[in-house]
Amino acid sequence: MINDIKELINTEDSHFFTSAVKRCDMDGYDYDEREFIFYGTANIYATGVDGKPEVKYADRKYADRMTLRLPRDKAKFSGRVVVEIVNSTANFDIDRVWAESYRYLMRNGDIFVGITSKPNVFIALKRFDYERYKDLDWPNPSNKPVPQNDVPPLWTGPRNQETGYIWDILTEIPGLLRSDEDINPLKGWGVKYVYLTGWSQSCSYITQFVTSFEKPEKHAYDGYLSTGGVRRLMTPLNRYESTKVYDSLQIRLNCAPAPVIELNTESEASDEWGCCGYSARRADSDDPDFPYRYMDIAGGCHDAVDTCMAYNSFDGDVAKAMGRVGGGPPGNSFCANDYHKYFAFHVALRNLYQWVETGMPPKSYERMRQTAHGVILKDAFGNSLGGLRTPMVDYPVCTYYNWSETEDPETGEKNVNYLAGHEVNFSKDFLKELYGDIGRYRELAAADAKRLVADGQVLAEDMDDLIETAVARARAAGLE
Image (cartoon, rainbow, N blue to C red; front, side, top):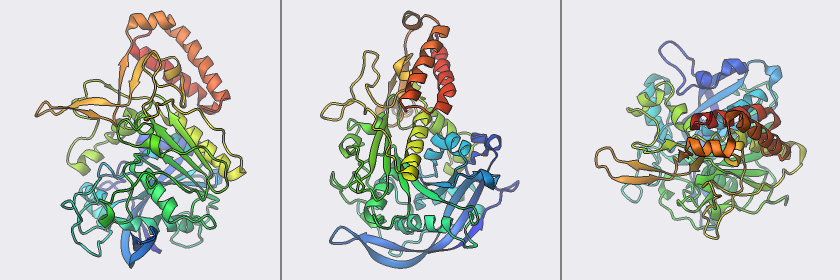
């Protein structure tokens, strides 16, 4: 139960970690950003003999981090709250769905809530500003090592911390945000809908949460947007199950108490790099017991420049928290993939909202074409066939790859990074042969964008931005 909350105030000496105020022009959207530490008690669960959660430790005290981004004018609030399970994979908080969706959320008057999801990030937050974040704590009732020398997949954090608090936290957040309790930072706002979302590892949190804790007759969230899912990394109920092996049925979504949309890039949609996205995806369904849509993004990769590398290295906060400079994969010998995915995120959110709030299921989109073994099929330019499109893949000026080659700066050893992709531009002569000049390319991009809006692959309000983005990419490739 969440029983107290404390707001963290920005001062000259202390500020919000990786604040979105400068990154996302929040003043331009007339939005505020607030940060809290909230306190409560939660159960720690273990998998029972029937596969369902059982309480292992009851009512354990914890303190966690909550971030809010909301309209300054309460009258502009849409009634929707989007809760993101903030990604912890890099050992610091990354609100990746926010980074892809902030334009849509703020222009619609939605409220964003970020919830810190794993105690491994507490080290970075306290290194960044100990006094600000010193209360963060998910105490481990056992404090014993786990198998494999206490180094399970994707880091559980220090041994004195337990990961399993997240399930009761996620269950209770919607009730708090809808309540009239004095500790509710949204008291009096009139919250109507609460959605749950997450990126990458957080996608597996959604799968585990929906499967183990949500009920068809009583679910905490009105809908779910699960994005960039690295499906082979199923999220365990507690740190001591972190080395548990999950079968192929457990890594996919097998129930849906409310509408679910899954949205993947090329990195996760394929089985080629071990993400198991092809194996885990389901057939689109309008069944009331399994309302589900799957969407994937041609051209996009897991760690794009704009929403990952550039976003997180913006102001030095990450470098201070991690004790090193953040950024892209070291030794990347190619131009990093910067295919802009936010156009697709906007469509996915629009579709989810309409499905939940009007009862009208969204259309089914063509998926990327793949072999029986989950390998994505390519066109003559080396770009993916099918999937959600933009002029950048319909009228390409480069080949988009969902992997990149990295080289260890000390040993010279080369490896493949399957999360950060790269781009290879066409030659200037080839671009001229294909499109003539930049004016003609603009005409083609505009016509294609208009077609995509009519097909529901792009929002009408994003069309001009999309055209300018495509033209800018063509100009950067050398088309004059």
